[in-house]
Image 1 (cartoon, rainbow, N blue to C red):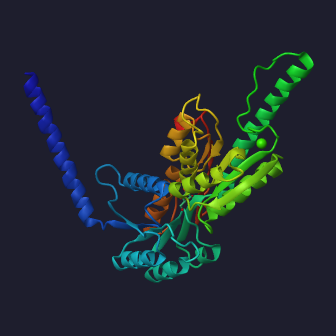
Image 2: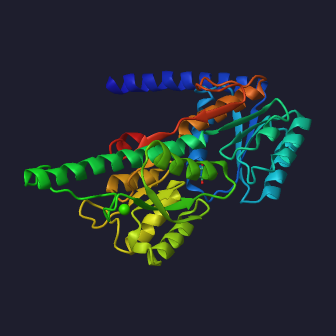
Image 3: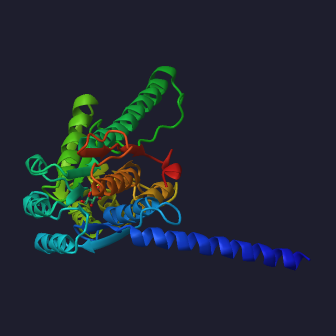
Length: 374
Ligand code: BGC
Ligand code: CA
């Protein structure tokens, strides 16, 4: 009896599925598929790869279950070459793609891409690497999705400064207890930031690609906020680009640790997580920032992005904090704008879209909330 019921259910279910599929393919064949092309500046970039995964999900979510607007989504990798990317855009246009999403290799070279697309009436959604304003104003169906870079610097400075101020307060309490009360009133004090106790934060800065809007802003604003708004005294021991890359940052950090100021470094401020993790690779090779609570001497390392690997490093205690570059909300905005632009008017329900630009908010991530950000 049970078997019969099961078989009966199965038959009904299969019939329903077949009907649904038939309805779908009918719908799909009468409707032209919207074609979306995406070109990435280079695939060897951890954040861009996470953004790509989010983009795939966001575009798939645009296809209602079963038979919503069917999309053709194609990703290509420009491999760090602007001329390769220009050709990719030309090919998408020749193949009658409706919208092209462009992660520029050289953000100052957008005009060639824009003119081609404008002539063909194709909308462009730029993302992550922001073309200059003048270019974005060249025609109406051009959009940009990214994050407000100065905010990342502000939040990085805030996270460092709050901990710095708390540490100074704890040092004061401990000192007051010993001198005035004659006992360890506030418990044993051990500095975690100002390792040499001179009330100055000795730091090194790992910068992203020169000329990238995020690298310039994050570097400047982080230090401006730390020293200006928060009045933290800092000493820059070294600063250099590692091109967003973990391996280059590891080399830079190894050289800095071996330099005569190496033992004085207290803090590593990095424009992104990949480079922060590269610095940690070098620290570990020198017996520093080892995972776990008893990991010995530990420098304060701060990144930006909140990539999966960075969140894991925060949980194990080698990376101190990061600032989330919200790839999920950027991906959703890109997909919303792209699909709606294909139909005429670009829109997204993401708050803050002004018809042309969407900037996601950055968020602080420390051991307190790393768990829920994953
Ligand atoms: C990210 C970096 C990434 C770069 C690529 C930045 O916004 O923070 O991790 O390498 O974009 O353009
Ligand atoms: Ca110091």
